[in-house]
Image (cartoon, rainbow, N blue to C red; front, side, top):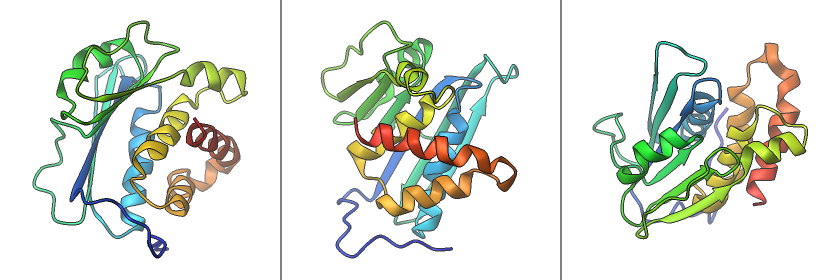
Length: 190
């Protein structure tokens, strides 16, 4: 299944977009990155997806680097992301300084009790965990954050993002598709 961008869809003039998702294991960090990677695959883009997690898995640190490009990617490691998605305070504190000047930082303000300090980047306080709980979408704060990331960056066409979400959820977990779609739509609307 290949989903090409709609006619007139403009990815912008940036030859590559790099993302860093970071948080605790169990917050769906790798899953959010996988959705972005699938979007790149569906649009026939060059991509890299590099997960990293501590030995603890749940509760340990987790991060995921994703790069989407129209030309070959030299390294899968993202050291200066265009966009950072921080799902917990340690991730914000560790990775805020790595965001490219002019980049974007999205943080879960339900779990992070400090604000970013940089003034040369755009910051987005998203109460994702609180919204997920309020909307009966527990455990889907990551997808809400992904929706907000898409809303601000348009890293792919809208229908590609929907198709990528469907591809990322295995058939044995089909019952999770509808709540994930709701969480993605909620994030897109923020």
